[in-house]
Amino acid sequence: MKVKSSKSRLEQILDRDKEEMNEASKKAALADLERVAGEYFDLDDNAKLSVKRVKGAYEVNLTFRAVRVKNFSVLQ
Image 1 (cartoon, rainbow, N blue to C red):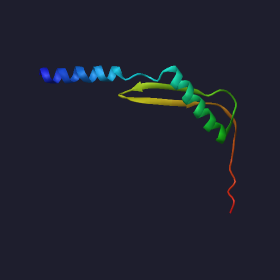
Image 2: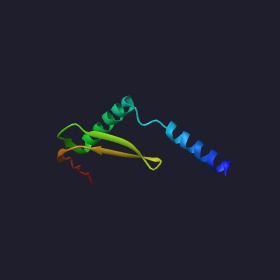
Image 3: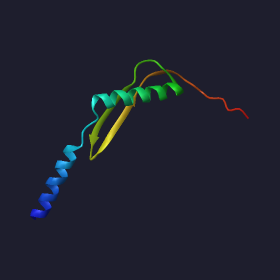
Image 4: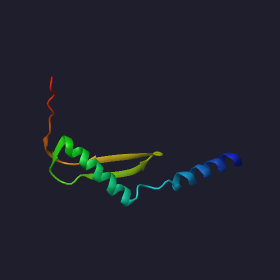
């Protein structure tokens, strides 16, 4: 019983120790993702990035409005 509670406590400590994305990393990621999105869309506004922990993993959402989809032509 004690081994199980120790293991559970250690898992909780390690889980809490994982840092959410800090603001500097979030800002850099958002700039990169906006640049890539801009290759496929004409963005109408600034993109928004949210990162949150959900059930031991991260849920990442990139949201932006676009006024146009950029279509590519394929040369044959």
